[in-house]
Amino acid sequence: MRQIFAIVGSAIFLVIAPGTIAGYIPWRICRWQVQAPLAGIFAFRILGLLLMVAGLPVLLDSFARFAIQGFGTPAPVFPTRQLVVSGLYRYVRNPMYVAVVSLILGQGLFFGDLRVLEYGIAIWVAFHLFVLLYEEPTLRNTYGAEYDVFCVNVHRWIPCLRPWKQSGHDS
Image (cartoon, rainbow, N blue to C red; front, side, top):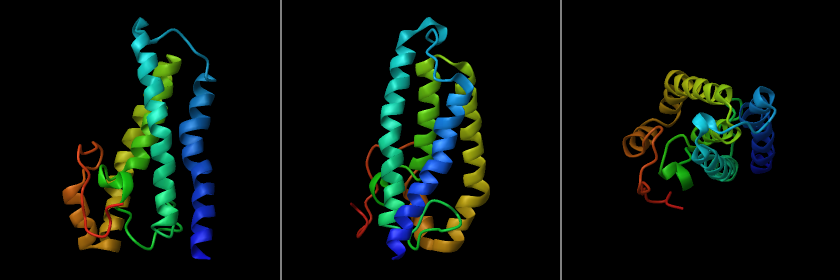
């Protein structure tokens, strides 16, 4: 029963939080109107598309791992029972935040809208402060040495080239 609640809760949180931050608000800013490429460089539009195409599956996979492997949600009100350190979490500690920022910056580049890029930078700063001031201390208090080992082996924001291998969590 807990896992069904975790799946439903994660799906709802996915729509509410990232759906609003990476979908609705960028739409409100630019109405998804394609403008001239930023600085007249068409490659920015391609880069934006690539960031969006890369970000969405990362976001979906990360949410699924919380529900299926962590038996909880990314929402602080219904946290996981165990630390999620598999999948893309073996490459970067915060794949959800990286994915959301990728989606926003991708939209800014694709639609040629500097305001969306500025919003994306502001969101990254907000995520960074949230991680430093709330999330990491909370995870350290909850999972102790297990989280410390994870932090030593996996970078906060820049993905590692090779996945971290921890016995029992390598899937």
